[in-house]
Image (tube, rainbow, N blue to C red; front, side):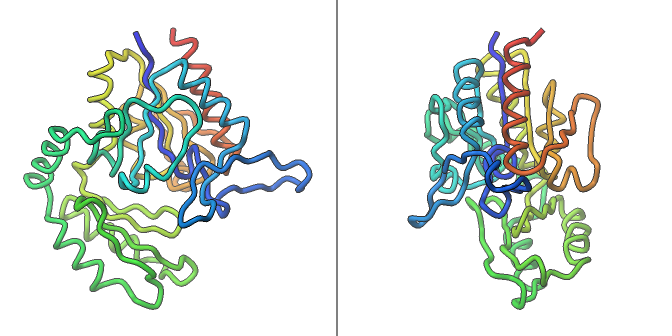
Length: 270
């Protein structure tokens, strides 16, 4: 039976220059491979060693990129290794099969959101009204499923995200702060639901997962084994669970370690 590996991308497997966390002396820094270009500029990286590990993993298991990115943002990424047959975008809102959206899956997601939480328009309007233009740089609607702000972290009031989270909780929404982005996501919109569907389609009997943020917690809990890096929301709150390994590595070297763990577990599933 195949092994399914579902991994978050940003700050888990791939890293912006600001998130690399290269703390070693410059001559000892790892060689980096650019895996994303945006507006003619390099944007995301992994180590060359991680790139080889990901290539090996793609030959060993069913690798499923599992991201909160929109489909357009995901398609900018050029990961090494075999093209994934499945990918999960928009936090589970879109399931891509050979790069094409599964319309039936998306329709089912939209129906659940309509039934189980407050509408996007209400949450988006509140974000616009309550956020201060002094520290907000962008307000975005992603795939007509959720909203996020791009902010200046150093200007963001300390309690604002917590207060937003309390407000959103009562409407059936979750708030997550990742780097310079504040996400407001409907609770029924989950990565884990989409991963379970891929496991059903592939017949996978073992699911491995990794992620760094609050939006990855459900993914990790749904997996047989999971890993989180030493940075991010989950590490900051010391979040863990019985099947989760908390790794000490931070930054781009955490991505390399996660891929080593994936490959070791996929090759020895017993």
